[in-house]
Image (cartoon, rainbow, N blue to C red; front, side, top):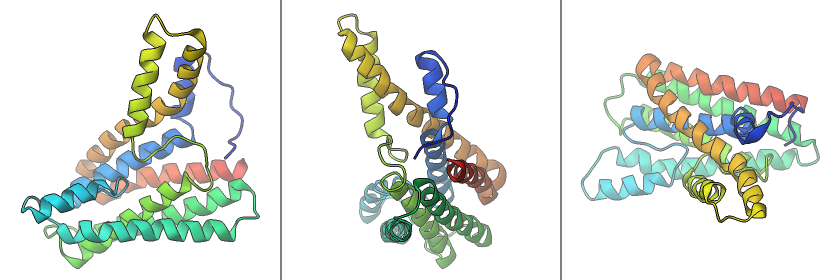
Length: 241
C-alpha cells in the first residue's frame, strides 16, 4: 500500500530508520508487543506466532507446561481471523487499496479491544483453562490472524512482520555480504536494498517484545492501548494514502 511521500534520510542507517517508522516496522512492533503480552498473561500462549503453540501443545501432552486447552483452540481462532479478514477484503475488492487497508485495521482493532476488555474482566488470571481466560486468548489470536492476513492482502510485497526467523536469516546473510571484502559491487547493492526491508521488522519486533513485557508489568491488559494507538495511526495513514 502506498504511503504518503516522506523525504528519505540519506545512507543505509537513515533508510533503515525510515522503514522502522513505516507501516511494516510499526506492524512488527505491534506483533512483538501483543505476542509477548499474551505469552506472559496467558500461560505461554502465542497470539501472533501461532505455530509456536504446536511446540507448547506437544510439551503439554508430555506433561510439561499448562493451559493445553487455550493453545489447542488458539489455532482455529487464528484461522477464523484470517478467513474473516479475507471475506472483508473481498467485499472491498473494487475499492482503493488504502480503503481496504483501513477496513482490515478496523477489524484488527475491534478484536484487540475485545481481547483487552475480556482480559481485564478475567483478572486475576489464575486458571489457564477458565472460560474467560480461553475467550480472551482466542480473541487475541483472531486479532493477530487478521494482521497476518493483512500482509498478504492489502499490503502485498512487504517483509513478514509477525514471524522473524526468515527475516533474521536474510538480514544476517545480507549484512555479511555488505561487510565481506570479496562481495561484488552489484551484490552489495542488492544486499543493502534487502537489508532495508528485512532488518527494520526484526528490530521493531524486538522492541515490541520488550515493550509488551514492560507494559504487562506496569498496566496489565490496559497496556494493549499502545498497539491499539499504533494501529489507529496506521489506519489514519492508509486513509490519506
